[in-house]
Length: 141
Image 1: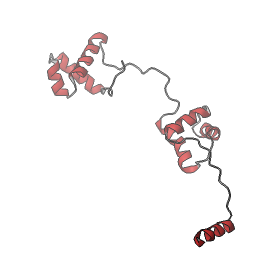
Image 2: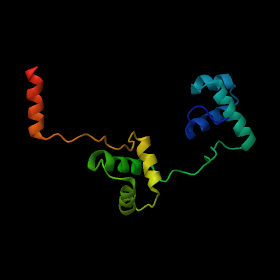
Image 3: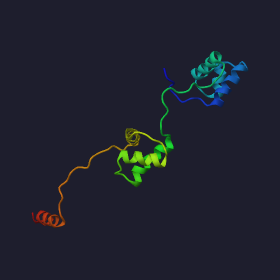
Image 4: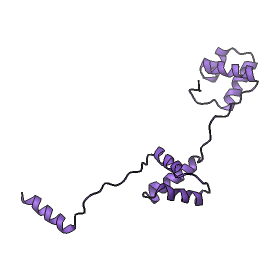
């Protein structure tokens, strides 16, 4: 099963192992550190099995764009040019950020930020003259 909570910091893991080496009980370590007994026990077991407290690297491909670059992409759509298409935005990213990617990657970034591609609804054009006529007609009744 994957871990459910956040990773412990390196300092906290080292503190648990230091207290363990000082022959403190798990219950005492729990009170000192302020973490659950299961967390303390898992860290001690990991240290006994592997001899270190390092976390294993994450599986899967790392994202192409880190958070900062994602915010730049979303900022281009949100403030500067809300009607820009993903292929054009891809070319813009290639020039500015100097990373090549697929337009679908840009779409994925935008969707995650809450921007979804929609076509505008077609509405009949009503000229100013006809609007005035319609307004007068409505007020007559």
